[in-house]
Length: 115
Image (cartoon, rainbow, N blue to C red):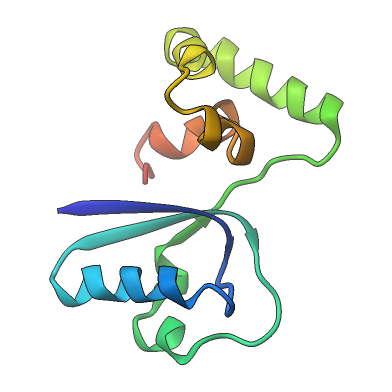
């Protein structure tokens, strides 16, 4: 089974419960991917290296400037309008939308290098 973990930062040493879930899925034979907004700095848990997790992470490039963020979202919606607009209108993903603006993540789910 493929499992996607969406986290705000990775590898965050303080979030060992997430790391335990990730490594648990790997130990059970599942194929995992990690989507993170930012790269955490500081100490790294030994399991990150043991399980080679940095090769399973894709970092989302979301601009900090609100205008640049809007421009990027509009460019993505222009590229794939139906999917982009559907992501913007879904109420189910309100919490994800606050942390991961879906139009910014959309290129990671499209094309040959999809998550």
